[in-house]
Length: 136
Image 1 (tube, helix red, strand yellow):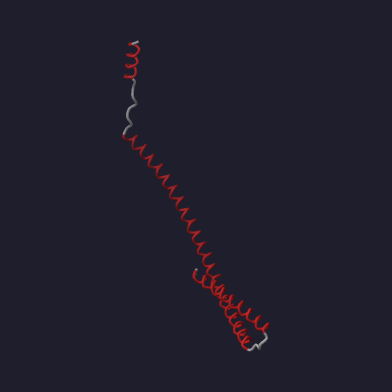
Image 2 (cartoon, one colour):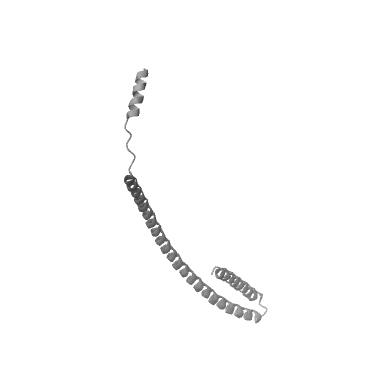
């Protein structure tokens, strides 16, 4: 049995190891590896460029939508101002009418109720307008 082990050790010891790669071979392998890494880097760069272009387009779309929303908000504020002016005129007429109303309690109560509704409407529109202006 010892002989078998000894023979095995001799066979393995005599086995020819491949010669180490030459400097030229090592340089070639390093160049191939560098080329592969450069190709991967270019792919990552192209992907980053595509993402950047996509982000720029999305940014432009968001800016466009924001401009539209701001335009609508300005139009809404303008409409609210017009409505406030109109309700103010109606309130003034109602106050004058109330001042010239006789002692008819039913008519006076109706005018008072109308006045309260107008005042509530004006207050609500002013509140909504101020909230809208705060977001501008």
